[in-house]
View 1 (cartoon, rainbow, N blue to C red):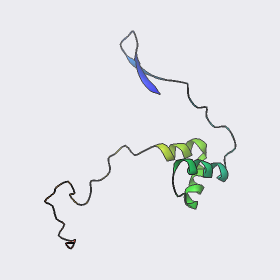
View 2: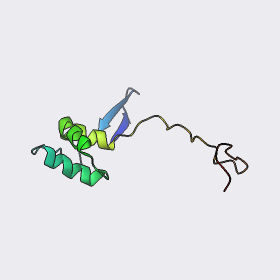
View 3: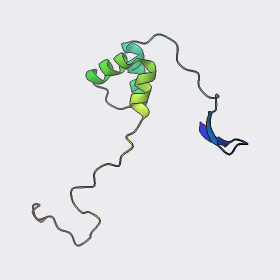
View 4: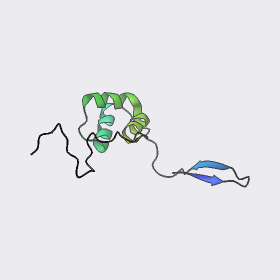
Length: 92
């Protein structure tokens, strides 16, 4: 957990809470990467396993848990408008 603390001078400084899980320091290979992927994603492919193994434990966790900051593109069709009909889709 990261929060901000206001010091006596009025400046803000970030501080980090040092509680929670300890960093993993054990062996790292395809078996551990597969275990991590089974716990976090569905349908691991061989290419995913190779990538996660190459990233190492911290890199693999970051890859699996960090989300893009930008919003996704809007839907192609305007489904929020009840009167909208897509001219390229046949009725029925």
